[in-house]
Length: 319
Image (cartoon, rainbow, N blue to C red):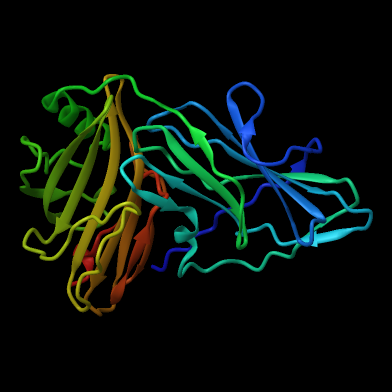
């Protein structure tokens, strides 16, 4: 099943913003502004600060027609931001749109003086602060703004592992690692016995940061599947060879003394070309979604980034 990435732009009327440059704004936010489209339209991005680790960045764009005639501007999938962490890691939200099937959305029409607002892509923070956030539209970056990050403190390794296992919504009940970084063999059961269990190798890798821990869950099926590892910062996985029944899942958590929070996930799969269908389930921290999706057996697909829980294709039925 090909994934369709639809990052929606929510548009609504808002107050006109007349700021310029990156600066402090209302309490709890910083703002960045720039004139675009021949200085006829002003885009002002406000970013909430501080942000709790594991929580979404709060990025809102205010788009104002400052000219005296009606203007059009393409906003859907054109608004973005780049996050730069202290250790040099850079996350560009435009990456999430690469290779995605995007619907055709007409440009937004703005009357003179009219302002619309749009929410930014949801990105949960998994880096220590302070961060530098650069909002932008099309090929026009706005001035960067600083964003502080707060964390509730890092738990010990044993507690962090237990919190992550609890937060996977029973996904690892029969494939639960006992030591961080060491894979165990087990099985992943399909909900409602919709397919045979996946034989799998499961591991949880912990990395300590100031005030919190990141936990990378990795599931590979069959257990001997080679060449599978999660690639940062976009939570990617290499695709398995086609014409084999294989599934790989990466699920990233942030762990503090308050527990484990899901921040990102991705999954890939391949299956033999047989006349059957493979059920697929979206997993969350509360367990599987009530209704399964699915695909015909045969081919390779998957992907992700930005998903709060992995989509698991039970290719065990493709035989």
